[in-house]
Length: 361
Image 1: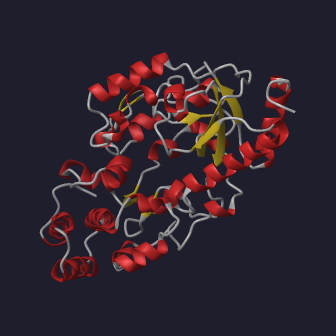
Image 2: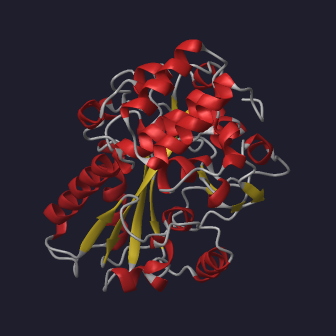
Image 3: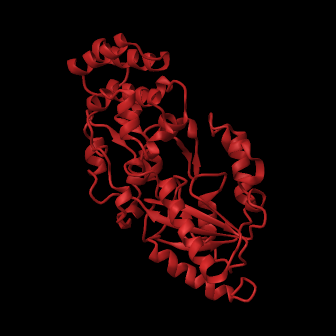
């Protein structure tokens, strides 16, 4: 059987069933025209809200025009995969312990890029078994793709005021993935209703006021950007607000009312590794680079290197309550020799433990 003589609607139904069998939470087919999203992206870039993420502008319109990125693409199969580990320590509990490191929940287990893409390739393989060779390419936060816009077009959910995708019955604790394909599958109706209403909890909860208006995020103020994407010094005006967050931030999702319905992950790959759902700051500070590389192998945390990991930990230690043990650990690291980037943050943290604080943690 070939693509030409297969019923597209029937194939789409089968693809949905295969996706469910592979563990995906939701699956839809998106039309690829994104003119309004292209305009919003251009305005966001023009305002400089992408900070130092030059790659956001590097590919021009390929990000908003799928057929320019992958010639021949006529639609996108969009999927979700829940990632919230049911056995991880409660987020609020960890955030309330200033001596404990907080790692964004998506990064606790295996690198999601690999998990989602492998699952999408399996889905594409199942399609190929049914109809024969066809054109496709799989993505999961791994190329210039407007994932949330495509998921919205696929009828999966709406883009909330915090700019994350939300589903009424799944919340927002899920990864997104796509298959760009030349299969002429009938698209789903885009999700047009916004269920955020008058709620502004995500806006008021953001520690650094990064959600500068409903549906508008300034990455330069975002803790996820500052601790992961930003490669230079963390601006002093934001350091105290980081609290004990050493890799990413989940506050806007944590307060979202729709996440009371969020499904927990059943994927062993997303289970927390090496106690990172509640490790002490001092324990992580004692890691050398070899330990960091060994214990973060196969993890999304490798988005940062050991230098940035130390930078983030130094800020978190500076935000912890005064503790002679912390001051001693900071001083030892400074005496042992670190990069100037790390040293700057260590000196800032050490001053907060020995000479008072300019701002409350």
